Amino acid sequence: MSTTPDDSLRPDLTTEVRVKVPLPLVIPLAALAVIAVVAIGFAQILLAVPKEAATMLAMVAAANVLGAFAYAALRPRMQPVTMAELGVIVLYPVIIGLAIAQFDFGEEAGHDTAAAETAGAGAAAEGGAPAGPTTAVTAEGLAFDVETIVLEAKKPASIELENLDSAAHNIAIYPDDTATDEALFDGEEITGPDSITYEFDAPKAGTYYFRCDVHPDMDGEVLSE
Image (cartoon, rainbow, N blue to C red; front, side, top):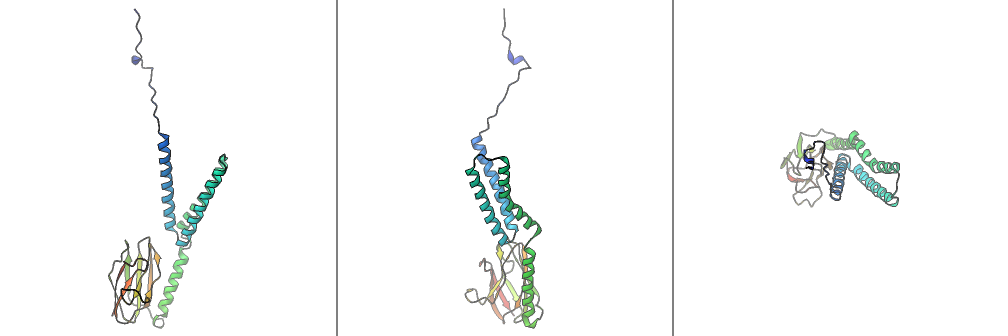
């Protein structure tokens, strides 16, 4: 009497398990993830550099990407060395942006110019008389932290604006809240995080209106006493 051996009792036999990866789904998702990471990272670089440099870097990067893909489309069979060279061409604006953000190229010159302008304005006020007590104003979350600014009428005034937002802000003073007449004082716009000190002659005694010209909803009252 013969019996058929039961393979399930043989420890030397193993079962091979194959996992099928749905490549038509995985590849697009992975590509989208890579694109999102690159886009967000490049956006952070652009936010960290001066506005003029950010505009130039964005334009150069866009031109390089379009040029690289056009070149690749016209030459489907490229050597690995050629593909690496295209990658370097596409990435060099990102490298330049990182260098500018790391070493603050262009920022110090802008800050020195702004400081010189405000110092000159303060020296000119009242024949070079020093500015009065400094009023601190902080811009955060598209809002000022004060609703009223008090100045000494017809005296040198000083307002320090600290911008904690990535958006540009300034302080401008108008005769009234219509802001239709020419500004009595129009402060320089700064992009945060940054700060600037405005020095100017306060207007005659009265009630006035201040706002951010970039975001007019950020406003308040000026009391010149």
